[in-house]
Image (tube, one colour):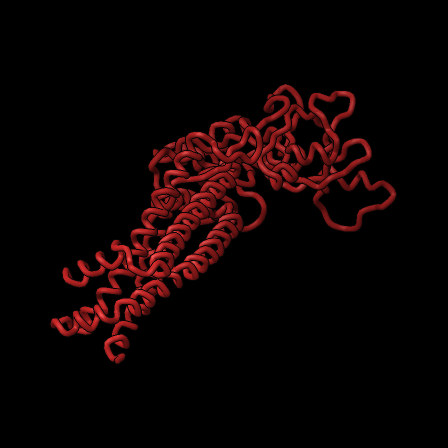
Length: 402
């Protein structure tokens, strides 16, 4: 293998007598460089956008969340709460009540979800850090914190005591509702908006937060009835182990979901987009590697006399084939690695100096990830291997030519 590698390096790095061959070789190397460079840039940019998108849901979604397997609520006894307190892997947990409601303000109405939270909620989630106007809930009066989207749809401001927000929930029961007084069909509470939060468009248009007592009163629930419990785990804790322990406490009558499972649709969408982006740029890289095939074939045609000389001196057809195979691999790997290094340097500069901005205050998010580096290296290597093998096969035809 040393003999083919030595000749391949000579052919690659020694300037040919034909300027056309030199130009074709340079173009092929630039194509590989550009393909590796663009593939890593796009993957790093998409990783940054992915983390940026998920960071919003991290402010709203807990590490673990349990739901009832059947029905809308779960009854939790004091003994079960005590057992949850004893679990070492749980840093904190919060009991919540969620239900669909109708918001009414002046002449406008809008469907939404109310989420009643207890006093420990802010130790489990960071939603209060997303408040852009006003303050978080207090226990002094009926209050809600509203999403920025809902606030705009209803034209609601904070601390407007002259015009209170009305929260309505259909009353449970059977039979027909009298249409003479439609208001009798709803349980209503008037609340003051004390804060407006902004996480992302979906959540901002969907949720209002209240104290758990207000939500329980509005929905007429018992003291031990809840919609879910949200958990914050200690660093390094195993989600699966904690889920198994929680299931044993509730006799497997609950459903446990991790943060990733709570955002299953978002994760699937991001993974699909990532795959499509990779396939598209891999196709671009494949097209660029056709230049490598063409460069090696032209080199074989130019070196036909040298090939016959090497064959006469005892080189086997496979050794001659390996010369051009090695030349293709050297060109691919060298161009790919240089493109990868330059792309990594550019990503580091973006992370530290914010070269590209989305808005005046928001730099384009990028992430340097080892998996992206490995994906580019493996992709370049496999495609270069195939291209070099196909092109090197032409050397045997050069031996048979007169």
